[in-house]
Image 1 (cartoon, rainbow, N blue to C red):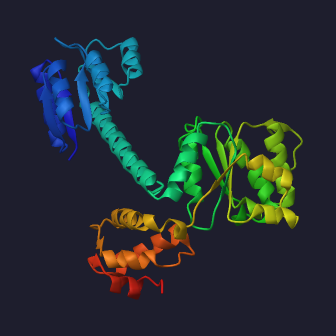
Image 2 (image 1 turned 60 degrees about the horizontal axis):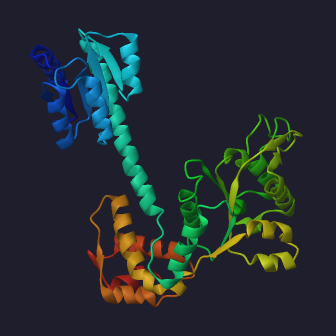
Image 3 (image 1 turned 180 degrees about the vertical axis):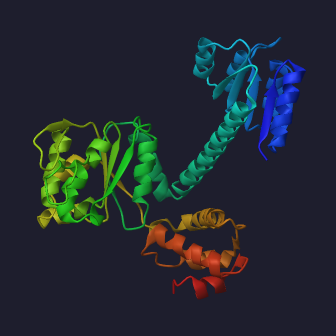
Length: 386
């Protein structure tokens, strides 16, 4: 049940609003001035506030400003008998969700409250989702090997340097790129990801640089490429070792000159993009085999971050297991399970060819198939790591 705070110095107005809101099954609390309302907002969470503007002690605009200053993000619907366009504009500029004139039309009030509550629910859901994403995207570990990576991220992220992230499949290269971006000066701009291995060679240039209408048979309209989408932000080229040589040449030009040209076009487009690249291949061997351009390698590898395999950081396995037990249980909406110490030791002795990704899959299987307390026998039976 959504809760509404009604703030008005007129008792009759508070009564009328309470009555109509309770008829619609809202929970209602009252405050007869801004001072009383601010105390309630500091101690209680509301889904919306219906607030008069003209009140003794503290007017509604001042209450709105103080509430925002204290971190209260509940939507305010302002009500005033002295309503003018200027008052409404002033209220919304200061952060009000909506504005209603007195005497309030009850249907208008209900519509405004319904919209405010829906907005608040959406805001809260977004916050929860962001926390889940941040948690699932966090780099976990305390080993010496991963601490070196953390130290490099801290030093490199605020710069404009390009970064080449190397390491085996499933070791967390994408998380390193996301961490670099989120700690950079471009964090408020987009991070655009391209998996070069997942895009056919004949389409990679269109994906990266876009194309003009009619550039090829299926080009029925103009398309903006990833470089343009990442303008003023960051472009993450995952599995860059699988990129065609022709696309590599165009990427090199974009990095050298900050200019791209869409496929089928001749207009030069300026782009301001920081590039991170990742690969599980040995690019120096690829260069020797004429599969990767040496000049592009040197452009990309201003900083190289080598992500350790899970086998090189087995001391982190207990921490990672605990993290995945909680994370996956939350995803399933189930209580988190615990795991016996000898079961963890068995996991530490495994050869993790699939690295962090493989460990996560194993923990997910154990959560589904294992007992309430995951045992060594569960790992042996359901872990498929023998």
